[in-house]
Amino acid sequence: MKVRVQFHGILADWMGRTRAEIELPEGGTFADLLSEIKNRFRSAMPPQLKNKDQETFNRALWAMRGKEKLSDPDARLSEGDEVQFFLSLAGG
Image (cartoon, rainbow, N blue to C red; front, side, top):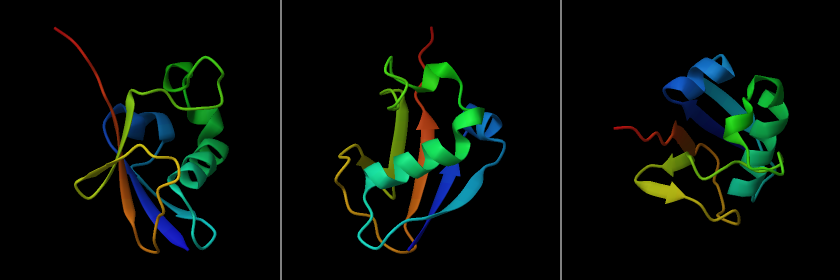
């Protein structure tokens, strides 16, 4: 199944694109999507996107499917879903 992703802000700069289409197996999950993004864009990802183990994304990376914030790795995705990625920034 195909899932569309959209990267916003500095994420788009780091990934070198604003959109991508990711192929996942039927019944694919949010964890599958993150794994495929990590595999496809590994060389473009700066260290600050990952946790200390360098294998998982840190909490500053937000993913939204419509109005739903995706955080459960076992959340099922469907053909044609669009997942938007944002980097949470703080400042003052």
